[in-house]
Length: 420
Image (tube, rainbow, N blue to C red; front, side, top):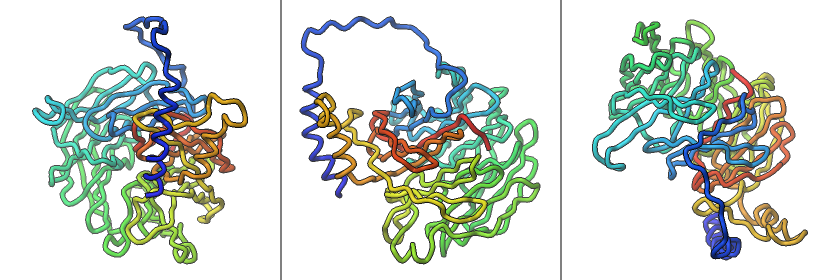
């Protein structure tokens, strides 16, 4: 409610300043040349981040250093979850379209984009059963050798659509009864999470057809303390965190999937102070340093989707917390326009906007991500705003606000500058 009231109060002021900053009537604006195709600088920079927008049905590319809006990829119905291969300059986007936008004949595809021009290269039509949840974690996966994309289907029944993105073909539908979502576990292997806390593991052949399936023992208790689906990949480990803050790792390095001993991100003392994990995208990992970033807030039971106010940083090798980062509001926007005050005034009034956000606006961070270079950045968003907060990922110091990226900010991706 604090954030809602704050936005309502600022909206009136914002409207005045937006209208004040508008171009005068009759101003000459040089015409643009249409039909041009620009190309992004290559190779991609590690500090380029992607921000998805459920309302505008797109994912925007932002330079986190300069604040420049570099480009975007439009998608279909629902949240966009782009996949980035390491061996090709392409981007894969599972998408759903209706012939009359919100209804009519449905077409599901895996779209293939040029990563330098952000232009469409082609598409592969798949069965019209793709899951279109608002939060799209675990809804698609790219095999470790970049050959196959598996798309999660949900029609009450569950399955995967397998696409060979090298040969641009749909190869098979794999049934996953009683198990949901999809995660990569090798060059030819994927897994789903089942209702009893076990994993359903499927291996494909080189033609993209199922050759074997296995079911593991449960690695968490879904009745006592379920994990969220918002896992992050650290090398050959998938890191899942439970509602109560237990970290459960899934080791996919060997022929048989293994489960290392769980450990606690939230101590008993932290829990007594009501600290909990939370947010739409509450985990990020920096591969080179082995640091795990966890978004936390103070709240009660079942508040695992509530926005966060701090990021706690862990040394994965030592299994201990090494840092706490107090978050600031990433910034506020209305219909893609930033709410700012005094930007055109003389110093010190030109800093009024940042001062007001830092002083009065709650952090209300819903998603976090970390870039994968040595000078790593932690960046944050609030779901109902189009601005991004940027921090030094090692020191935790706040650097800047970037925006706007769109109307809303749902999920974040920082695909370049590192690896598993």
